[in-house]
Structures are given as structure tokens and as C-alpha cells.
Length: 436
Image (cartoon, rainbow, N blue to C red):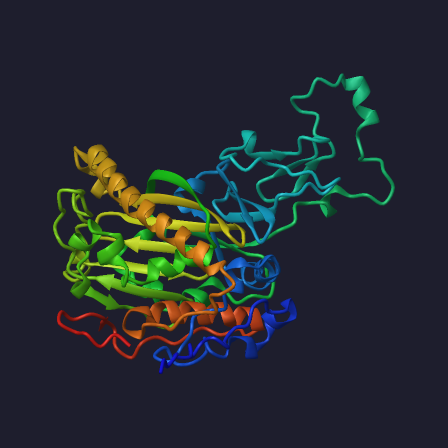
């Protein structure tokens, strides 16, 4: 007699789920279970266009989202153009040194003011390409239009000038502001005018990384990637090292399984660390540039990793940082912007350029391996037969924490998860076999 076992998850997360269920707590009851009993986030969260549209408004339009790096806007005239929840945003630093952010929309006829690749504006002014309405870096409207630099004869300018229009004052037509703050080398915006300050979302992370003096670090390398997968898969893959022996044979030599610790306090982030960092292998590694000399004894030998909710992964090492900003462009498409940053002190090394190139080659190798595997996950999760999988709690607690932050936002809960009771929790010991 043949006995067939029943899949205990076969009745979980029926597919398809009606879109109205995406904002209901009951939909996520299996992900809400304690991590040692939990099931992964519903597959629709990675495949459904309806989920993606709701997520843009409930997650990205209601969170502090990384849009760039402080060294990219350290001087007046430098700008960052970024997209958050489908809105194009301009970030600039005004003549007084204050960070400003605005919707990338002209107040006249809504033309997009700056192209996505613009990094500097002329004369500290933002000029609309449609009708030449022009704004300063404080967002004030300077001219409607501004004739400076135009070929319009002076005697013809009166026909274009709006200064005599009834019930119109250009002071009422400045750029539409967006909340902007920075921490360390990162610049954040928040579309929600009622949101708590950035400090609440970051929690204790600034204190944990205070010894690195991150506000002094500069972008030194950049590279972009296209990923045929949901942005959350990028973040979830970053958060767990369960896959290292099989996906990253080079990385696991410099970031050994037994040297991984969960490392997270209260805040909208999930974190872990590797300590100590192992020496480079033939394939490369994280050593090379000299470490920041002022680091504590512990920080000088440790790599700190944090996924900042909702979509930015930062890897902070003694001599450099590697950052991935995973920009969602569809339920199954993500654009990754990656950068390497380092402290000016580390860059004084006479061989800094070659050592930075080595770091970029190593991170590129690791990232391409990750992209290949998360694209495989995207293919599998799109199969209607898949209903969700069991968490492996010894390795995936950080992932479980992140998925529940997503659930909170989707169902309208505004809360910051607490931290671990211990500062560092070792997650793997050689010889352990009990994984679930």
C-alpha cells in the first residue's frame, strides 16, 4: 500500500489572491507566526501587478527611501534626480548648504524639469525646457519665463512675461517640496508629509556605526545592473547566508559561515555581521585599502551589514562600504545601483586606485552570482504551484523580520521592530545539524 504524504502548506496562500486581500492582516497570518513556525511572504508579493501598485503607495510613498549619496550633493548646483513610488524627485543643496528636495515638476504645465542623468545645473538654477519657467535651489520661482540667456529680443519679451497677469504672483508658484534628510553618506526622501523623522526609522543604527564616521565617506566607484526579479528578493538574498556555500564559493572563504552573527537593534532595518573578516583568497576579498585608523578594536576586524527598509543594502567594512539600492520598476524587474565608498584617509594609500579596482571586481563577482540566483527564484515563485515555503529560522530570522516590516506597511501598521536582547547572536556553529 502506497502512503502519500500531504503537503502541509498546500492549502496556504491560495493563488490567485484577490487584490483587496493584500491590505488585510489575515492574508499574512502564516508569515506573522514566530520565525521557527513561519511561512514566507505570499508569492503574489513578488509577481502581482496589483500588489506592486499598492506596495508603491503603502511602502515606498510612506517610508524614508535612499535616493543618493551625500558626496553627490556637497556643493550648490549639484543635484540628484531619483524616482520614488513613481514620482521623479530632485535633491539639491542650496547656497546656504541646506539639503532641499522637490518634485521634478514645473508649476506651469507640469513638464519634467530635469532628466534622470543630470548631476549639475547651471548658475544654481533649475530651468523648465518647455516654457523656461525657472527656479532657484531654494525652490523659488525666479521667472515666468526667465529671459536670461534666451534669444528672444527685448522688445518681444513683454508678450511672454506673466508679471502683469491678473491674480498671479510667482511667489505662489515655487517648486513643490519633498522632505529630505541625510544620515552618514546616504540621502533619504519621504513623500509622506506626516511621517516621523528619519531618526525613528533608523533606530539605533547610527549609534552602532558611529565609529565609522560615515558622513566623511565618498563615492569612488559606481555600477548598475538590471535584475529580472522583484526588489524584495534582492534584499532577502542579502539578508541570509544560508546560500553562501553553494552560490558564493569565493565569498565564503573571506566571510566564513561560523563568523556570522545577527546584529540588530530597534529600527527599520535587519542586520548581521561577519567577525573577524578573513584574509583575501586568490579570487579576491575585502582586504587591501588600509582601514580607518580611528575604529575600535572590534570594528577594525568586522564587516557590518544592514538592509535599510525598504530597499537599500549597506555593507560597511573597516576600509570601504558597498551599497546596493534596489529600485523596483515592476513586480519582476529591478534596477540596481551599486556604489563603493571609502574614507579619504583610506584613499591616501598610493595604490588606492588598483585596490579599489580589486574591490569592485570582487563585489561584481559576488553580485552577479546573487543576481543569477534571485532570477531563478523569480522564475520559480511565478509558478502557480508554489504557495510559500517554510522558514529556516537559524539562518532566516533577519529575512523574517524584513518580511514582517513589509506586511506592517501593507496592512497600515506604523511600528518599528524591537532589537535582539543580545548585541550579537552567533547564527552558525560547525557540526550543527538541527536546522529547523
